[in-house]
Image (cartoon, rainbow, N blue to C red; front, side):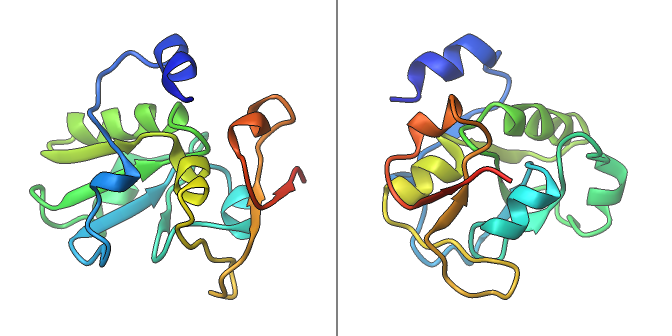
Length: 144
């Protein structure tokens, strides 16, 4: 479902990791959210750290990414913006950086939990735009 859009917009500079390939406890993974603040506030992956997209700063992010060998999974709505952020991290010397295939949409489509800013599970997902929302097959689509 995501192949066409990812092939159209991405350059393949960062390897993908699929939801099904992630260990279910996620203890060894740092999730970075490469969307905008309003998207993150609606819902985000468990323990995800907001880094943004338009204002992403690799030097600021480096202050909490101490180990260049740790596994980092960057995500956005479907995996386009996250490739840019993940690529910048690779250029900074991080060795195990992945782009979440299908982003938060595929995560939620696979019935994985998302949380709001009160750290409560939610069924609401910021759908980015009406055209991109077709990739989100479940939940409550938020556009504001």
